[in-house]
Length: 149
Image (cartoon, rainbow, N blue to C red; front, side, top):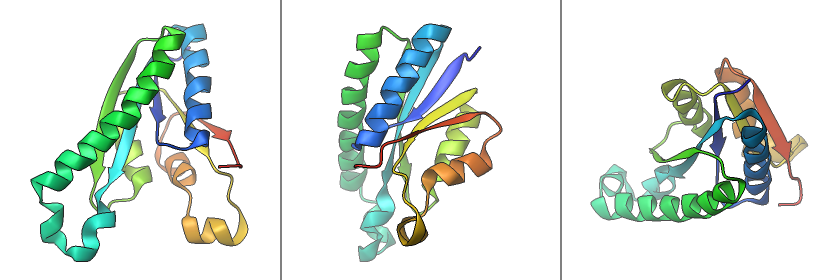
């Protein structure tokens, strides 16, 4: 059915729930997982673009991303599912676009991701990475809602 499932992971409960769902599905289908974490370097841009070029920022971001992926590995391995991991850096692009590019580059045929389920003003202010991914990929997207994050 599905050969490779992409799962974006972060520190949220929604992400953990989506990861577990993706693992269960991958185990059932004999699929592999491609887990990614996007480190948003744009949060450091208030001090100018020169700071974004800093090797210290890149090292720190990779270290944080690696720690998040290490926690994901523990979950994935408990299901006995084949997997790949990737830390991606973002310096201003929309996170949904980075995820969509990873789906295509890694030839994934399903995306499983958590969503916080914001609506109304919160959705307007926060936007929706999940909605952006839905609009940009040509593969099925399974959204796992965890509203109490």
